[in-house]
Length: 280
Image (cartoon, rainbow, N blue to C red; front, top):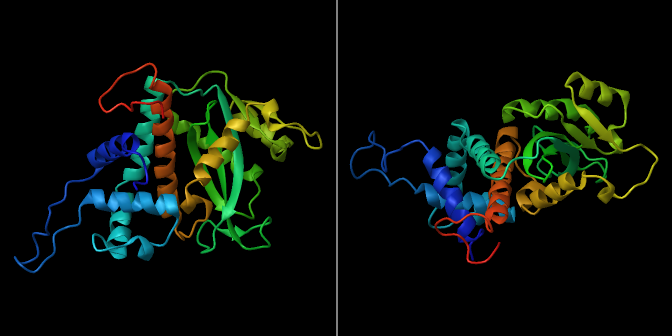
């Protein structure tokens, strides 16, 4: 059974393949008859999708078509040329052009997940008996489209991660003049208000000690996006030790979320080749 339905996997691969550098099928430096053909990029890409969705080890997902070493090497090759980051940027630009990002309403919140392998962005988790964990400070638009994230150890509080998270807005191009940032009570401090004022942003911050359902504000969109991301088991329990690799998997997951939302929201208003027969 495929990891993603064809209406989502095919356009994802088409754009991903367009970003890959051209490579010969065999290494010209090797003498004839003394080399193996290069494993197809589509095969490795499908393996990365399986890793992202199921969260299993490289050895478990490897088979006769592709080894674990090939998956790792090709992954690092693609990271070095910035394919995953560029793919996410293209998905955001396409969504903004067709549907429109709701950048006047932004939500930021952190989410702590497991990181059993430790690594560069792991730390002692305060909610998991001091085990290694990962805290991601995620930012979404008013609908819940992931705009970016900052990864840190689980022992890092959400509030200090707000400034580097908001700095990611600089990569989104022209921004509305009036932007409201919705935050939970963990950000209720003078330091947070100073950071927002320095960027000419308006803050809607929940007050400490006052209980209110999350539906009372538009902050629930970022919580839903965290749930979407945690549906990819490699993000919910991260074994990657390098920050660059962890961010690459997050970029791939964010791209899937963005394209899926784009197809669902345009299904009733646009027509294209290979459009799903039913609304996804």
